[in-house]
Image (cartoon, rainbow, N blue to C red; front, side, top):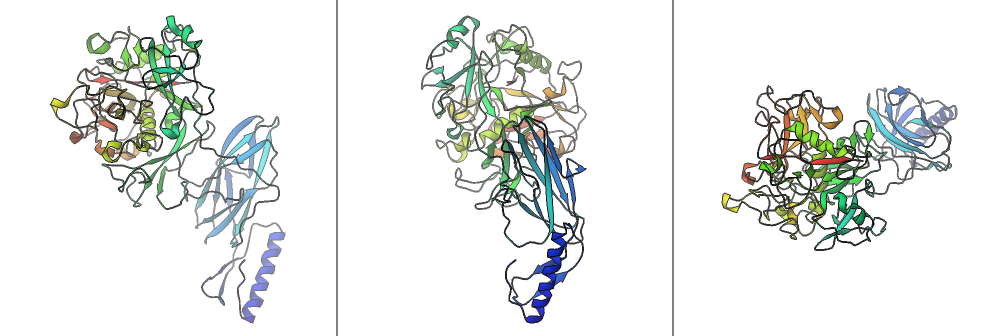
Length: 599
């Protein structure tokens, strides 16, 4: 408590109050006399008496204990409620010592966006009447015994600096490092040597294979069965012949994100170091990204106000990294729109499941296929004895809407094209594929726009800047065809409406995102659709959307637009989507799809 010069009469009152409070604390009560001190008037002190109480809940039940099984990790949601008729301040801490092989952290308050005290374990919060402070605690128990951690709370008004308890409680260290790509047995890590894809060194500690800080996302391929053994046993640096490659993949590591607002109203990302102007819908700013381990799942609002030297605390882990009841360290995304094993067939494949999917540049994408067949073709990669050499460890599936969004958010971060210093201003937007032949990986050399005479494959995917500007990183290591090319159907469905998709019944729930009400703000079962690339990034780069004038015939989500749409139409771009009766899941010669692998 700061020393305050008081007149003699006030000094006596002050000393009496201090004695009473000290006795209460020594008695172990969580009930205190409350007082406030005016910092402006050195001789003024106001006294407010009354009991201060709290309610401590762990995962919704009144408790102060966290129990974690041996050799496991667990996440707890702890809520402190203030039932008092005045503001109370909580001092929140661990009561018992943590063993050396047990780590506990973070404590994050999603509502007030403040972090734990920098000294470690104590956490001071101020709650208004009837308010609740929410904390998330991660406990990692690396011991061979179950552990029980007890929480403590002091309630009152304390102007003293918080101090780390002498027992040295330990917070889990956070290192912003992407989870290492998980390769299936017959996937081959590759990097680009300037003219060819070559076998990468997965053991290189200097990140020869990938470096997300430099927009170098991890790439991998599968090759034909006749060459698989040769390449798997080949030396690092061996050229992987494109004729032998059958599928190409890009790793999206698990992350959490937050979208900032420069004006406190419009959440268009932050200006940061990548824009020279205040972010707008036409030229949005940076989405903040932090890479997180598999055991961490942030559930905050994903919004914050941009302030100088402020710490971002409102993180959300995209739904794309939860697959059914499994939390994923990342996902493998098809580098290009899906093609077929017979790309010269009508529409690059047509409405059949007899062909096999291929993922390569410079070939025709697979179109005129209904969603049920897209879905079933993607699942064929899981079949025993599949041509790609995939094992039962993988789950290949048609891309979900939330997975598309996870790619788009990462692209709009410092780890994606936004952070690529070779592009500035409007060219931060992903360039459009305007190939009239639906050739994968093509680039117009500019963001969406142009006239009919401009159509075609002006630049292939490997042409630096003009070609690579069509990828999510602005270099060859990103994902292509996410603006233009073919319209891409994703597994996002309105109200379990089968429509013309070809399904008899809807597939297992983990394979699609379900949207219910008509309100764009609350499509996810009447809640905000965080991380789905819907209202959060609405009209970014002018990528418009169209959603229901009537919900009678609504069904499937379409992303990216196709080559014939221009920027002025607002119907193409990585943030473009539509849910209308026109796109009912049936076959169309302008619609394709993409495949994702979960390990």
